[in-house]
Image (cartoon, rainbow, N blue to C red; front, side, top):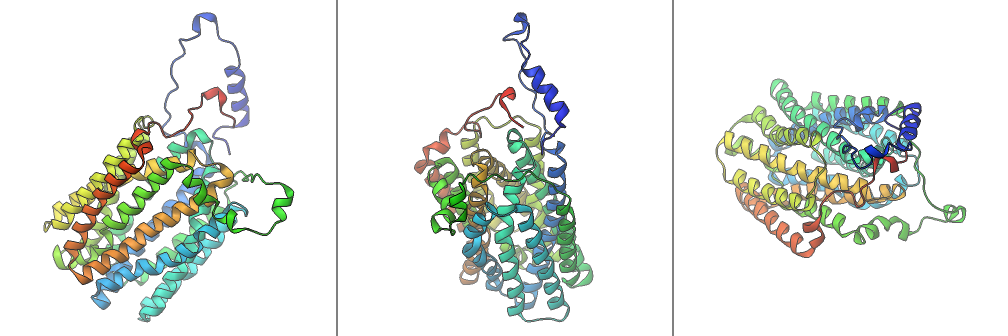
Length: 451
C-alpha cells in the first residue's frame, strides 16, 4: 500500500518528468528527510499499533513469569529453563515457517499464530490460579514458542508489504520505537500488578487480551500480496529442502547481513543479563517485584530515547563502524551492571545497555529489509528469527546455568567480556562490516522509485 493516494502519486510522477528550466538544472535542493514517512501508511499504522499492544502484554508476562517461577522454586536453573523451552520449537520450525511465509498469505499465518497465543496465555492464567505443575507451565511455553516460530518471519515480511522500499529504514526505527515503548511500560506495569495482587494470574489474562486485540486489528489490514517468482511447474513441485534452506544460502552470499546477525547472536547469547534480573532484584539489590519492573524497563527507556533520535536524523552514513562500537559498548555496560550493588548504577547501566542495543536492532533490521528480495523475505526473516531467538532464549538458559554453577555476578561479567571479544572477531573476519557506509546497497533517486 502506498503512503499517498494514487492521484497524488501521478501528479508527483508528472512533475518529476517535466523538464525544469535550464537555470534550475543542477541547483535542485537535496531531498528532505521525512521522519514520519512510514507512518503515512494506514496498514503500517495498524500493524504498529497491534505490535505495540502485543509487546506490552509480552513484557508484562516476562516479568510476572520470571518472578512467579523464582518465587516458587528459588532456582536460577528454572529461570534458564524458560528460555530453553521457548527456543526449542523456534530452532526446529523457523526455517520451514519461513518457507511457508513465502508461499502462504502472511496475514493468515499471523492470525492463526496470535490466536494460539491467546489460548496459551489463558492456559498460563489457569495454571497460575490453580497452582499447576511446572511441567504444564513449560508445556504452555512450548506452545508459545511454536506460535512464535511461525509468527516472526510472517510479521517481518508482512511489514515490508505495507510500505514502499524507500521507507524501510524509517519503518525499522518506528517499529523499534514501538517495541521499546512497550518494553518501558510493560515491565513496570507487570511488576506493579504482581506486587499489588501477589499473583501473576491477571498479567497472563491481560496478555491473552492483548493478543486477541491484535487479531482484530489484523483483520483490517490490506497489505499488498507478495509476488513469488516461480514458474508454474515449480509451484506444483513438492517442497524441497533446498528451498527451505535458501534463506541460509542467501545470507552466506551476503557477508554484511551475516556479520550483522552473527554480532547479535553471540552478543546477546553471551551478554544477556535480563534472565537473571529476578535474582538481582531480590537477592543482590533488594528491591522486590516493583524494582524488578523498573530494572526490566530501564533498557527499553534507554532504547526509546535513542530510537526517537534515530527517527528524526538522516540515514546512517557509517553504519558498520557504528554497529561495532554499539555492540562493544553493550558488552562494557553489561560488565559494569554485573559488578554493581547500587540500584541506581544498575539502572543507569541497563539504560545504556538498551540504548546501545537499539542502534544494533535498527541497523540490522534495516539491512534485512533493504537487501533482501521480497520473494525471499519470509525465509531470510526466519533465519534472523532463529538467530535472535537463539541469542535471547539460549542466552537466558546459559545465564541461568552458569549462575547456578557459579554466581549470578560471575555469569553476567563473563558474558560482557565475551561480547567484546565477539565484536573483535567479527571486525576481523568480516571487513565488509568495517567498511559499511549507508544501509542501502544502491541508493535510489526519488524519480526512480516505483510505487
